[in-house]
Length: 446
Image (cartoon, rainbow, N blue to C red; front, side):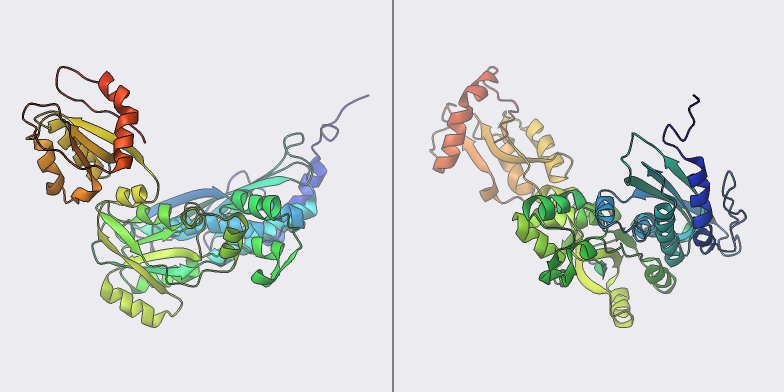
C-alpha cells in the first residue's frame, strides 16, 4: 500500500481548482503596471516614473485577527478579504502613498476550492477599491495545524509616494486642527474582547436579532473595514496635510500620538455620534470608557492634521469630515501616561537635590512613566523643595514631608490621614535605605 500527499491531508488537485476559480477575481484588479499573470513565481510591477519622478516605496503588512472567527461562524467568506486589504493600504496611506499592488497569504486546514475562491473574491474587491493590483499570493493547506473549515489570512501592500510629498508629521505644530473620517463600525480590531462580550457574557447567537444594531449580530460584526484611499488621495493633491493616522488597534489613544511631533499632545473633543455597536458592547461587559477608547476606533477610522485655515476649507468642501480636536503643547508621552494609572514613587532627597531634579526632569518630559507621590528630605533648605514650582507643578499635586529629625527643622506640617498611613506602611522599607543622614530614591509603588 502506497501513501500519497492526499492521504496526508494535502490535495494538489483541489489546489489547482482553487487557482482556476480565483483567476477572474485576480485579473479584475490588474492595473497598467502589472507585467505578470497568475501562476508565475513572482509578481512584476512597473513604476510610472513620470508620475513619480522621485519615487519612494512604502510597504505595510497586517492580518484580520479573530474577526475571522465571525466569518467562520457565519460561513460567509467573501468580505474578510476586504478587511485584509484595508488594514494594509490604510496604513501605507498614512505616509501619503498611493497603493500599487497587494499580495496575500492564506493558510487553511482543509482546502475547499469554493471557500478559497470566496476569500480571494473579497481580497480582489478590496484591491479594486484601493486601486491596487493583486499580483501574487500563496494558499497553503496545513492539515493538523488548522481544523477543517478554519483558516488565517495576512496581506502585504506596497505603495509609492514622491519623496517631497511624504507625510511624516514633522511639520505639525501647536494649534493644528484634527479632522476625522468616520469608521464603518468595528473594522478589524478588538474582536477577542468582542467575542468575549457577545458570546461569553451575553450568550448571544451569531444570528441573533439586535434592535440596537438594526440587524443581526453577525451582520454588524462582519461589516468590512472601510478603505480610505479614494477619500484621502484627492485631499492630498488639494490641501497641505501635515499628518495622518489610521485608527486601528489601540484606538485614538494609541494611534493618534504616533503621527505628530513629540513635543505636542492631542486635545480631542468627543463630539461625534458614536455608532451603536460600541455602547452596545460597553453595556454588556460594563467596560470602562477608557478601555473602550483604547481598544476600539469608537467611530473614527482615519485622522488628518492640518493648519486652521486649511481645516476650514476642507470642512466646507467635504461635509463628511469632522473636526474633533487640536494639537496643544505637551509631550506625547504625557497623553499616554494620563491614560493609565502609573507607578507612584517616593523620592528621598539630600541637601543638594540634584538627583531629584534629574528624576523630575525625566518625569516631566515623559521619559519615565512614573508619578512622584512624595518628596521626603531631612533638610528644610534642600534645593529639591524649590524645584517643584519651577517645573510648573501645582504644590497640591505633591506630598511634601520634611521629616521632624533634622536639627534645623522646627515646623510641623498637617498631612492627610491617608498619606500618613502610606508613610507608616512603607516606613520599614524607607529605613532600609538610610545611609548616614542622606536619603536616596525609594520606589514605593502604592
